[in-house]
Every structure is written in C-alpha cells, then in structure tokens.
Length: 309
Image (cartoon, rainbow, N blue to C red; front, side, top):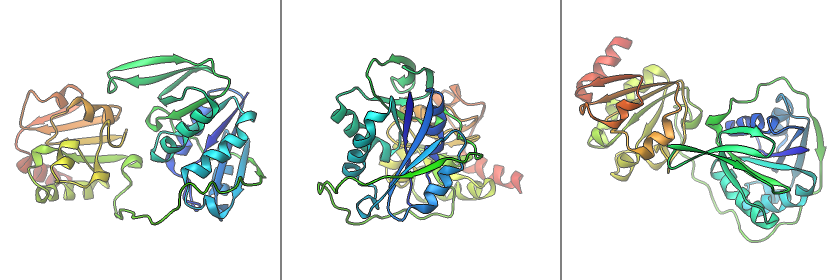
C-alpha cells in the first residue's frame, strides 16, 4: 500500500498545502511518494526531498508541465495510478482542477476535502457548510482524495527522499497556457498567514477597509473579507474567506464588521483564537468568537491600534 501525493508548486518552490497533504498521506499507511510535474523544477524537487515522511520523489520535467495545465498533469497521474492505493492532492484550485479528472478516468468516486484519516479506507470530511462531519468509507481499489489543509499539520523538514525521474506523457493538446495575472502584496499569503484581519459588510465601503490596514500592519497579518464585502465591491476576490472563498485556520483571526453567516464561519471557525468586533450583540460571529467586542468598529479599531503602539 503506497500513497501518491500530487505536489502543488511553481517550479521554484512548493506551496504550503502540499506539506499538509503529505501529513495526511503518512496517516493512510505505507510509503509516501510525491509527484512533481513541472519544467526546470529542480528547486521544488530539492524542497520536497527534505520533507519528513516522503520516501520517494517522482520527477517529470517537460515544457508542457511548466504551467500546471490540469489536462496534462492528470494524464501523468493516470499513467502512474496503477502503482498506488491512494492518490492525494491539496484541496486548492490546483488540486480541485486535477483530482476530479483523475477520478473520472479511473472510474472511482472522489472523496473531497478530508480533515481526518480514521483508517486506510475511512475518512472524515465536513458537510453542510461545516455544520456536520461525514465519515466516508471507500471500497474503490484506488482512492482519489483532496485534503483540506487546515485539518492537518504541515509535514516537518527532516527527510532525505530518493529521486526518480521518469518519462513524461505527451502533451494532451487540449488546453494552452495564455497568461497569468498574480495579485502582488507585501502582506502574508492569506491561507498561510498566522494572523488574519477580515472585514465584512459593516465596513460600509472600500475606503473604510483602510481602517484595518494599520491593525494588519502592526500584527503582520494578511487581509481578508467576507463574501458580502467582496460582492459589494469593498474588497478584492482573492481576500474572500468562507465556503466559496479560502479556508483559513490562523493562530489569530480578527473579524471586523462581519455578522458571521454560516458560509463565512465554514471558512474560519478552525482558527485558534477568534476576535469579533461588531455593533450587533446578536451577531452569529459571537457564537464562535473567543473574544468579542460590541461597539463601533471605526472607534474600536483605532483604539486597538493605539494599544499595540
């Protein structure tokens, strides 16, 4: 019984969710192999080789893997699938784009966003926006799984995995990479940040989000937003936290002007410490908050920044 982990990377480094996925893979039993399909991806390979729990890194280095096109990566995974009992990918846009293609081609049922491994064939995953947890047992010969990163600790450094370079499958020709627009920020990446400061509909406008910037600066935090704030145009899409946005579990989550709709709670309720600031004492966010302040955010946030001085 051997597990294959699909690494998400940019050829130069490995994305954080891959480390959490490796932890889940070690709990499935047997050896853990990691597939890196890329182009000039030596630095990413070196990084994975040092991860504890990985026994082998399988490298496919070819130009048509340079940009991680799902059609090509899925074909490479399918070519290797017969050697594995489990195929795991992080539950990110990257993993969610590839895993369903692999499952469909293998004619097996995909298990999505697991948060716990109970046994080699039994897994737990949230349902109903995180209000219930389903225990799923799979009888498929190959189990195709996506892993919610917040459910597992990141694998530690301390390994010395072997490297095997294999031949690449041919370019499928089904898609072509055109361009990529990356949001640039001096702040930490939202899903990897240890502190997140989020604003909601209560902010009132995009200009009002500037009130949160000094607080985020003081704490070295990433900025987030509720879907209501994003839909209203107050914050960019890549800030959205929630069931239809990004799932985060930082050490500290500060929710400002966020009422706490169930979809938002699903994306942040696993945070270690939750602080809520809202003028409505009945706001649902207070039901999950460790600390709550009822009052005007435009007065309280500057006061909080002043205390941090």
